[in-house]
Amino acid sequence: MFDISSMISRGSISLVSFSRVSLSRILISAGLLAQAAIVAIAMTIAMSGDASAQDRRQNAAGEFDFYVLSLSWSPSFCEEASERGNNGRGTQAQCGGRPFSFVVHGLWPQYDRGFPEYCQRPSPRLARNIMTSMLDLMPAPGLIFNEWDKHGTCSGLGQRAYFEAIRKARAAVKIPEEFLQISEPKTIAPADLEQAFIKVNPGLSSSAISVMCGGRRLSEVRICLSKDLQFRSCEEIDRRACRRDQVLMPPVRGG
Image (cartoon, rainbow, N blue to C red; front, side, top):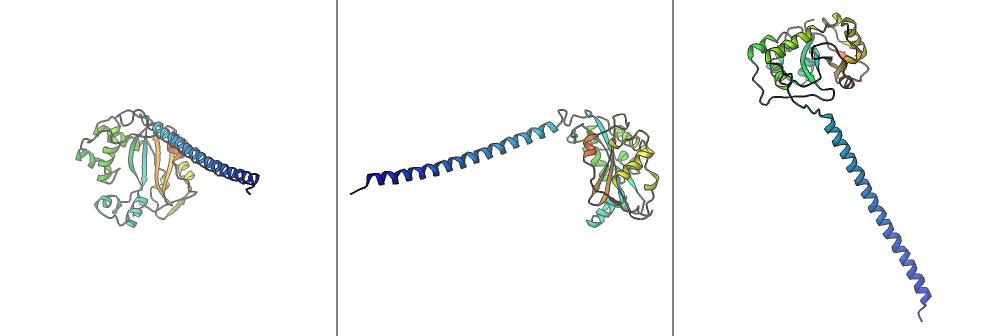
């Protein structure tokens, strides 16, 4: 004979087991859906953050908040170029026998968040006589042409006026004397390098200057200037500064 009570009991156990398995699957599915929702929300936030980082005036010539004057430590550039085997004509003017220390990398229009670039496509070809007139400050023809295409076209200035602004900006910044003729490798804290510039440039504050590094070497000193070329603070530029305790300044060639 069949024991009905036993069958019911076994059936009850099977139903319970089935319910447990189903519940587990439901919970797992719900968990995956929740994770997917979290990822989607995070991506949305990131995308909205990227959008907010782009200024509404993006790439409109002449519409920006301030300039960054970038001064490159030429001996670092030349050492890095040599290590890469880049000894072509593009580097010979800067890395030949002339003893360059800080040279102008560029004068860059900036927004308080972000920056414009290539504001005219195609950009008007830079006149060669203007290029050659800047070689004392920017000793690389390719660099000068690139700076006009990428940054100068965003200044709202004509070619000659833009490079005159570069010359005026460079004249507004005094290079500390101890960095003009470094004959031996020098190790320095970025904060001490900043203070050396601040000491000889009245009105320059630590919030208006940042030191950049490429690996262990000093790469650039960036100084923020208003549109009329007065020192001004720039928190975003300062946040990107080198975080190393010390940076190496290779010696000036021929110095």
